[in-house]
Length: 283
View 1 (cartoon, one colour):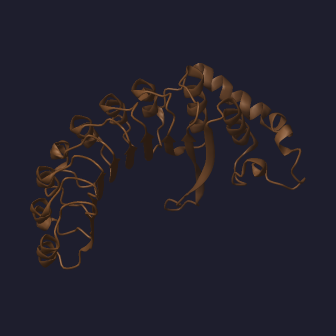
View 2 (tube, helix red, strand yellow):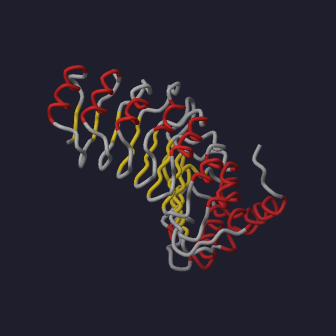
View 3 (tube, one colour):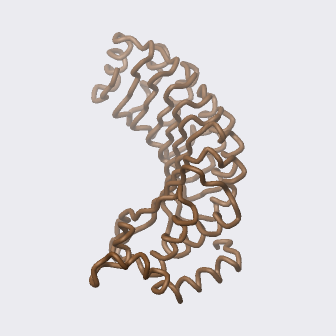
């Protein structure tokens, strides 16, 4: 159950009561028949209370941008919209910021979250596990390290994780192996060499792995070769060579491999494609 504080519950109740009133300034420039979210480019199905909460959050935290994203219909249901949030600029962590985000999530699920603020740090992410529908998380910046991974590992609904320029090592990567439905990992500019992947050997969900512009090497390929469900692997800008690539012959499900800006030779690629003739390689 979501651990929303009583203050959040009260704020949420007030949004439902006062949503239409708080929206009047936003709607002053819209036609009489315009949907309540038109001024914020939100889907028409968003209620007045939801639009009011989004408007208040974006006004209070100018580095936050919110938009709707389609969610496929479940069996017997109808398509709907979830929330995609980008946090950037001068946004700093505060109790109010966390409560505002949880408040939005209580109204309409936050499925995607990208954090690009240089002012947030590892410990600020602890509350993210309370977002019960979060499926995609993206982190930018050297402020985030292995400490953040222990909080991210508690997000059981997470399906995709991306980091860009974060100080994540193999120890941090290994912590993500406990997330039951994680199917995509993208690490750009990390400190990962590959040993942190050994805990993913029993994963049946991981299908896409990108470790780019890092010290990842041939020894890392030994662990990649044990993740049997992988369909897409990107190792561009790493230290991998033909020796490591040849170890991927066991990945019968592999469809695409990117080894741009590496020392992998054409001979090694040709050898790999003998075992995996349908494989597409970007070299």
